[in-house]
Structure formats: structure tokens, C-alpha cells
Length: 216
Image 1 (cartoon, rainbow, N blue to C red):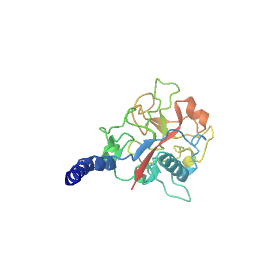
Image 2: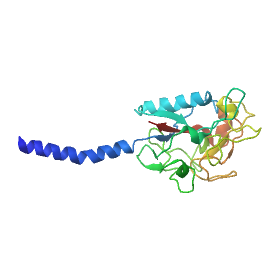
Image 3: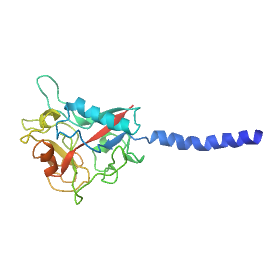
Image 4: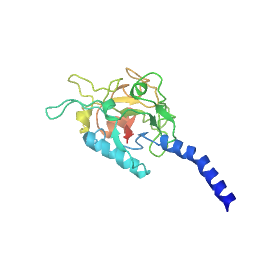
């Protein structure tokens, strides 16, 4: 009996580090496996956050508060919102437990670990990029390279994520870090979209997907 107790304690001690590592590296970042289906009309920031939460809950990630990485412009009713201010301080891990960035500066710096292979969905899948069919590498952000909202009169957020009209626009990034546009290798600010409808987004290499970050 004593021998069994000793073996049991030893096993528990050996398992503890692995358990702690699993907790430390728990997923708190993913790219949506699908959008709400209405182009860039996500139901505003609240609707986008809700979509992140629902997708996370579908795979059991219910212990965090989930926010979409989306900026929003100032209106008469609300102040401007920077995507970088919505997601906590890091570090962030994907579905596989791989760190994609250690903090907010790393996330928006030149040495983050954001690639097509590491930007996984809530299910742990990769998303089609350039060269795949269909290409879905245009990811909605509404953000500049540093994760802040654009200033000026042009539409960069599809009316703050409430429009699916053909004549609007949203800033998108390339999750596969390649393609065309002003900043082709940027994960969060490659170029503007050509319209806000689902077909508009699909026609230029997108599918209404966006990034989700979890905070404890």
C-alpha cells in the first residue's frame, strides 16, 4: 500500500508541470473559422465579440472574455476604438499552444509569430491563403499597422461593422503574409476591401473572417 502511495505521488508530481504548461499555453487567440455570413456587417463590435465568444464556446474555451480584433471610428454617439486596446496584454497562444506574440508591442512588431501555419481557427485548422481555392486571406481589422483606427473621412470599418453595402470599405490584413496591396505582408493592415458585402469580400480574396483574442 505504501509502495502504491509513493508511486501515485510521484506520478502526480511528474504530471503537474505538464498540467501547468497546458494551462499556461491555453488558447487565447484564433481566427474565426467562419464569419456571421453578412459580409462586414458583424452587428458592430458587440456582435463581433459575441461571434468570437460563441465560436470559443463551441470548442470549450469558456473561461475567457473574448474580443474581436477590430477598430471602430468615432461617431457622435461613441468614441473611436483601437483594436490593440481591446485584447489585453498577452502573451497569446493559438489552438496548438504555440505562442504567437508575447505582448502588444511584439504583436505589432517585426518579429511576431503570425503566419498562415500559426494563425489557426478555434478548431485548430488553417485558413486558405493565396494560392488556395478559394483564397480567404483578407481578414477584417479596420486598423493601421500599429493596431489603431484610421483618422479621416474615408470608410475603413464598413460603417463600424454594420454595413454589407457594395460601396463601403474595410481595412483588411493578410493572415498568410503575402499578396498585393499597400502593405502586402501585413497581418492586420494590407489594403482596403472593395465593398462590404459577402460577395465583395469573397471576390477579392476574403470571407468576412476576423481575429479573436481572449482575456482572463
